[in-house]
View 1: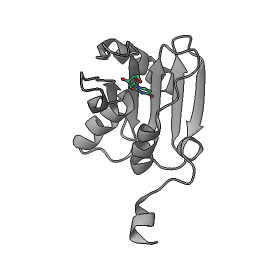
View 2: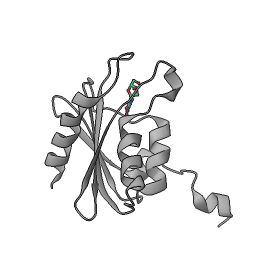
View 3: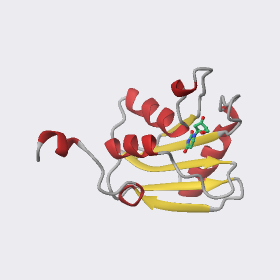
View 4: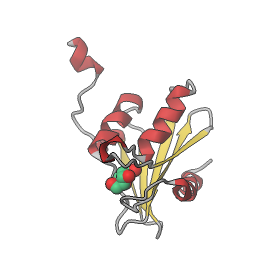
Length: 133
Ligand code: THU
C-alpha cells in the first residue's frame, strides 16, 4: 500500500460519510505498520457537538482493534484546498502518531499536501507534560 493508494481509500470512504447537516463529506484512511488499513468518515448528529470527524473515527477504530503502530494517514474532502484537520483531531493524532509520521491531506482534484505530525501540531501537550517529564 503506497501513499497514492491510501489517498484513494480516503476518497472512496467519503461515500459513507453521514453528513446531512454540513453536507461536507470527509474520508480518512490510516495505514498501520503491519500493512492494515482502517478507514473512517465523518458521522454527524442532530445534536451537532456529538458529531465525530473522519480522522477520529479511523483512529478510534484502529485503537479499539488493538493497533498501536501507525505508518501514514490520508484525509480527503471535496474542498478547494487539501482539507486541514481540525484542532481536536490534531490533538488525537498527536496522542498516537510519532512526530515524524506523515499525514497526507487532499481534495477531489488530488491536490495533496503532506505534513509530519510535528508540523501539523507543534509544541503539543502530551503525556510527558502530565507526568512532569
Ligand atoms: N470534518 C472532518 O471530518 N474532518 C476534518 O478534517 C474537517 C471537518 C467534518 C466535521 C463535520 O462533520 C464536517 O466536516 C463539517 O465541519
